[in-house]
Image 1 (spheres, rainbow, N blue to C red):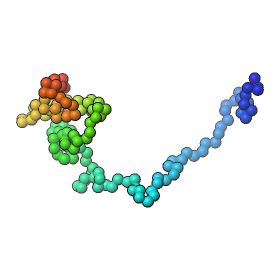
Image 2 (cartoon, rainbow, N blue to C red):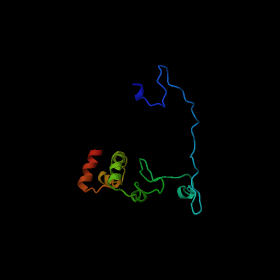
Image 3 (cartoon, rainbow, N blue to C red):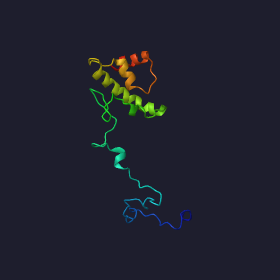
Image 4 (cartoon, helix red, strand yellow):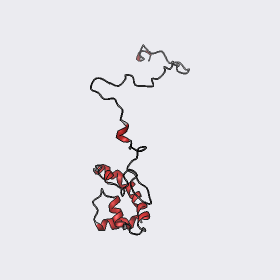
Length: 143
């Protein structure tokens, strides 16, 4: 019924809908960030993340030696182990570190004076409270 339609809308026609002119979209923030007194600029100084002798280096490693790229110690190094690992963090670490542990066992177990697979599992899965029997079972599974 004509009375049911709102009065401020045009009556529908059979043609295409009218084309509205498009306005340019803003590319930046609408307001500049607050930089009032006592507020530090939102810039991280290079000295916080850059090493003194070159580009930034993260605490990462890769085989076959498995030493830290930043500090040169056995990886995972104490700096990486110091990161807090709550239950949710452990759940995200387990798949990745299991894959890494498998590669580390292949790289490190045959070296003269190298660690045995149980020690490798305990080293790379430091965030899990594993007994020797559990670590041995994981090492056998990951070989």
